[in-house]
Image 1: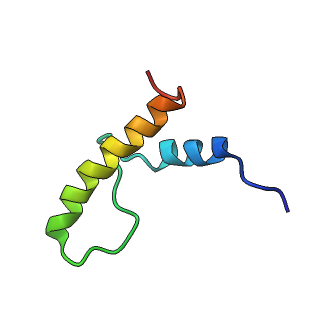
Image 2 (image 1 turned 120 degrees about the vertical axis):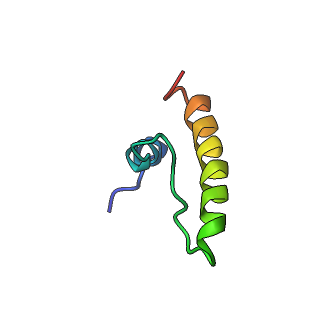
Length: 57
C-alpha cells in the first residue's frame, strides 16, 4: 500500500474549494447558523496552509 504524501493532501484542499472560493466544514453541524461561521474560519486556515506551502501566492 502506498503512503499518501503531503502533496496529495494539499491537492485535495484545492479540489475541495467551492465555486465561491470558500471551503465548507467537513464535520457535522448542530445548526446551520454556525456552518457559515465555521466556513469563514476554515477558508482562512486553508488559504494560509496553501500559501505557506507555495501552492498559492
